[in-house]
Length: 539
Ligand code: ATP
Ligand code: MG
Image (cartoon, rainbow, N blue to C red; front, top):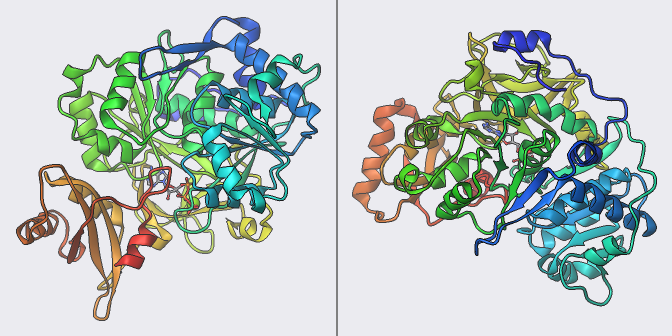
């Protein structure tokens, strides 16, 4: 499951084998395995804004998670039960995940940014009986409590109160669990809800194998991860597949310390401060966050950055942001692609000469990805179609939770469809065109919003942009752009014309936005994805 040591992409693909151990367990792979060899090795470092950073060792993680595992078992949490983890980045979050895996329960990460309704929906849909949270999460659960019939136990991090179990107290009063669950790679381990960008979020259930399946991708996008001094961080919530599986768990498996930081609203200066102060060398930064870093002036002279590798996924990175990172940070961002159901299957890797501005890279060794038509036939290079992944694949979900119909609909034969349109070029590079629903049809042309948004971003006044199709009697749809301006710019008719001409002269005539609306912010999921369906409704 780890990349062999090879010089070229072709050799890697040729020589890669999936050798996932028959008793693979996510929890043990990220804690006990290292605790056995190097108990004092640091696994987590917590950034504190006041400068009092604290750390946790693999020995401590293994011990505390084994104690919490015993406590969960004593509460009646059985193999397969869902344990909701409603916590920000922090030690307790990792301890909770590992404890759940060690008893064969299913970890269900939830973001604290969710409101009470979003939490209620996911807790009810999953039938979780136990939730581990802090006082912010507790307040939201209390708001929803009447509507949560399945929920039996609340475990609270921080000061305890009546009616809940104290997290630290459970750990102090239980001995490490005598016998951990014997799990196989296909046994359920983790359930993550999709971002809900295109509709109601769906629970994607994964086996323990999912982490093993992420290892080649991580090592491809962050070459030689695990070098002395390497340290990983992401501003993304660990409750999202991105934060959890593109950063936290693979890094811990490789023995790379992960920096945790309190999850407030993304602030560019704070992000640079965290990376500098904590000595972050490897970062997973989604495109939206990278775009928000762009207005920061001279980050390399103002911050002592040790960054070595940056991976990015979740949205199109785009040429503008790719070039910005090269010029400003001196790093080629390795963009990769996947979805909650099947993650990290395409990736760039500059080290292996797989990098191309505007492309998501090539299939990661171990995964088979192709562009297919509606009958499941593989399309040749240069022809646009649906991005699809062949099964079996360890990163592929076991199925949507309680929704066999939706699971079945996801497959055409042995191809898992992604709902994303793309094209592969002659050299094997994949380019993202747009989600099925986001593709704009105008005057007979099919237009991906990404290219327009990327072009808009290149305009000096534009901070963020989104393009959608607006129904039009003559052209079927016209392109409408929603634009957030950088500080110091104000919306005027002149600016509108300027921005329109900017796109008109750079892209083809049919692609320029006939309408531009200036907004203060774009509707986004908690994972930083633009919700274009809301903008379409508004348009
Ligand atoms: P939902 O399925 O609930 O609508 P979602 O698809 O946004 O939400 P995720 O699974 O978090 O939920 O996101 C996966 C999607 O993100 C992919 O299907 C794709 O549309 C988009 N995506 C991920 N990586 C990239 C990338 N590198 N370039 C373009 N799009 C990407
Ligand atoms: Mg999706």
